[in-house]
Image (tube, rainbow, N blue to C red; front, side, top):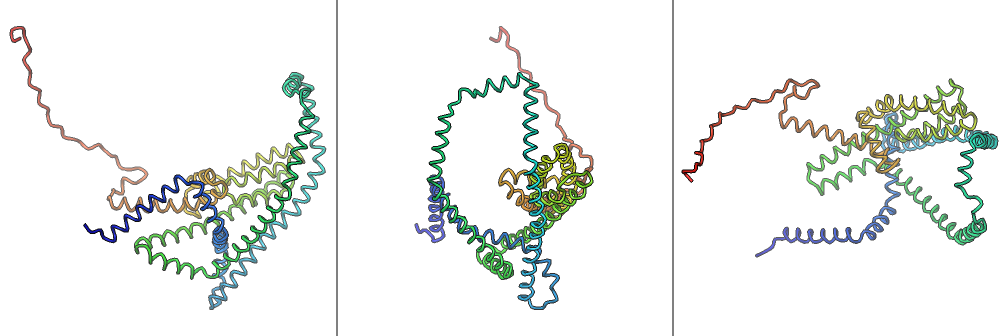
Length: 413
């Protein structure tokens, strides 16, 4: 019996797959170590590609404004330079607003903190004096008199002594980590510029490689989904930026109306943190509430009420309409995508899951429409108020009565 080359190749592939599966299952630490090293090598290029994708959104708009320049290379180079200048100006504007306001706020808070803590301590002492049973409970459960203060001091000294021995080693490791981070950042930035300058060439090379390996129909579908994903992510980035600006403007307008301090600083902080979908603004709320708390606790309470009100308006009306419509995803699915992405991957998952869910939603809609056409489902049954669906009548045949069996009698027995 002769074995063909195709069958032999399948046998070797099956054996290799079994060996690989065994290695993955029983050598998990080695597999994770190897994947970690591979990820460390390719992480600058992944970060650079992501940066290029984000910068491509404003660069594409700028390049349309420069369409009168006939030469593509000159138009692309000028568009990249203008994009970098625009991003630098936006970052400079944010920091120019944040840093002076932050310095003034920190100085003001530092001057008011002693009085604030003194008032808190005074309030606690007054409460304990008015409620002696609470004071007795605290005294009984803390056992200050039984504490071994000498042992605590010895433990503190030994901790400091052991810690000083690792200072040099940790300092060297920190310097190496900082140098590696700077090198990776430069490498990512250069790779992003290369991707922006030669994006058409890279796309063409990717298509050539894809069509040389996979069937033509599969390649067509992959390219179509890739273009859909690109358009969806681009609309999501622009929609998220618009939503953050709207939310920051809402706080900048309403906070001075109610006489709340640090309106500009808190509005900028909330606008920046709101780039993280839905839950990002809550981080800005915590920071803003702390700033106002030191000045006036009552105003801090009303600031939280104002934040919850504006957040309800933004989360239920503005965000699903601005971001949801920009990615073609209904508001309910936007909220679900943010919740799932946050549980799985944290902040990055929130940013990533909305456009991913939008692509999956579009593919599911296409699949559903195609299946409905194939199955030829009547259009009336798919409306909001479908036609009355009656159960089909089944013709029942009359059942014959079973033959009566003669009863046993004593004589027959």
